[in-house]
Image (cartoon, rainbow, N blue to C red; front, side, top):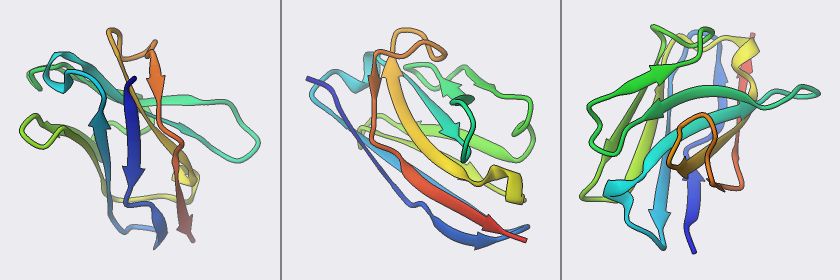
Length: 118
């Protein structure tokens, strides 16, 4: 069974940066598409970014384009989300996800809280 464990969330001031990590286990990481989603307080879950199994293809939600970068290290079974120029509206629980399709994943992590203060 695939297991995803996020880390790296926390409290940061607006304009700051954070890097989230997600450790994958229980499957074949280098054959799996990975993604990040987020859920702001009181709102639905939103697609943030996705990356193909090789890392050669990435996609981003409109609200984070140019500020966030998704990457992966297949030797470490880990996917990252580098978040720069953070805004208060980026405050959310961030979830790591895995599957065949980035926007329709099969597996989810438990999430990590990111809070951006103004």
